[in-house]
Length: 116
Image (cartoon, rainbow, N blue to C red; front, side):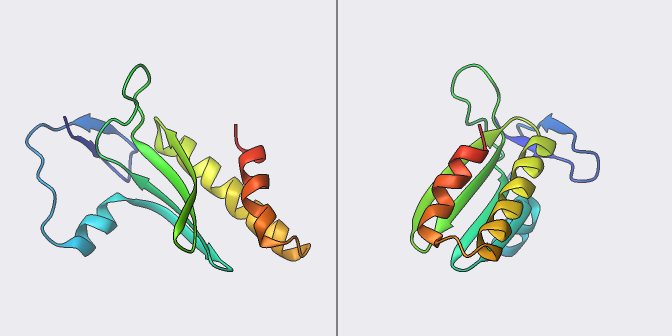
């Protein structure tokens, strides 16, 4: 089943009749919660549209950190507010690391420690 996310109200509704937009740019705009890039690490938070919780908790949002071609972190959340909060914490950490000249290879380890 597909879920629909109302960006203005953060309301999630089940929508079995939903069809993905044919236009990829429209599709990306519809799903994107937030994104940030710094020194080759791209942080992206998106609405998944399908439940990725498999069992138990419904997980509809995902924050992922990509280091060039690798996916280093994947975190999933039930609500947009949770995903935004973690995204903002990780952006803060990336900037903190850069300001203190922490080697980039340590950023992902610190990100994993910061977020439960």
